[in-house]
Length: 91
Length: 91
Image (cartoon, rainbow over all chains, first blue to last red):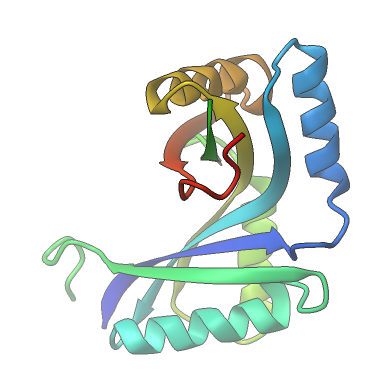
């Protein structure tokens, strides 16, 4: 077993309404920022997990996204897996 | 003026409570996922903006974070700036 850091980016699908993004864009305008063309707000979920390999870690993360972390109708997700430094928590 | 995509990652500071992360971790456990060591939930804010250069885009994004996007007491932020393909929206 090794430990992996899995970074999941969940973002609103292009073309779908993103009220939080609109609110942020409006607030930036109120603060005087010009030149802001668009703002989208998503989630960044960082999961540390033990797995037998990077492939397994990614497969589990994809399943987690489909089951819990992302709404497949309104959101896209992207996954980045990185192994943690060896020796840190070898058992 | 060129157009830049600025990606802001706002994450709860290490050591501070992250109730949303705890809720996700608990839910993953309920779904039968073992080996999840920790879960942290942050925000991913993607801002498209016009700026004179990458340096200016980054400086403005940092100011936006301090003023609006992140809570400096409880959250860290990281910024990644990328230029959009030339010719896409030249005016």
